[in-house]
Image 1 (cartoon, rainbow, N blue to C red):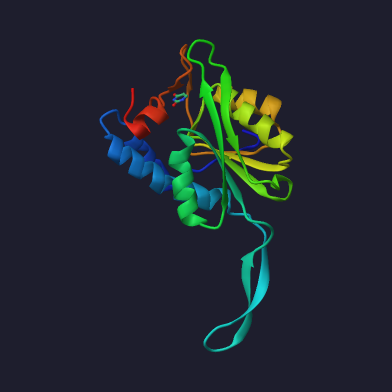
Image 2 (image 1 turned 30 degrees about the vertical axis):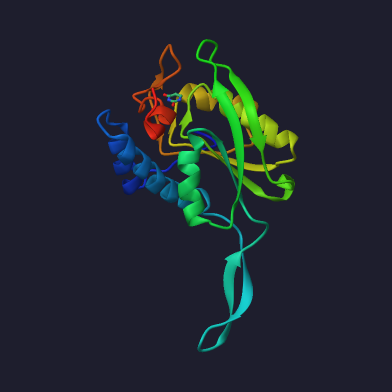
Length: 209
Ligand code: URA
């Protein structure tokens, strides 16, 4: 599928299977999401530009590789996005974080924004938006709209599971934003859940219902 990268690393796929199982506890789900997010972060940042800086090792001087450009921004779509954000910050501790509060109205399935906080200078940074589930696409489309209106130009979207319907709709509105996911599942059901999916990611992460 154009504009979509499926991260099929065996460790990602193995951990995802455990997360999908309905008997997996909240504690295990949370730990696995944190672990998997570091692996996903590794893949989504694989092509970042490098430059070099002069350093001295205990033996010699050398020009050593270092990340080019401004610090990354990881933008979490609350609340389940925080489960991915934590592991990503483990891997890139200097990254900035944005939080976007969007909830899904269970009747209309439309996105409603209730919180937005992001670093000032988004235009010169790579922004990686994270949300475990790309279902209808409504929340992430709303989050992208907001980030773009705040100047973000270089954006990627990282999720754990995506529904084909969500990818299609998302790319109709934001064709410039590449999607990275661990799996493209079968379909969305009539309630907007991804099938086979893993249930409600926020509920499974925080033990709510
Ligand atoms: N959000 C979730 O948490 N799960 C789904 O299956 C769809 C949207």
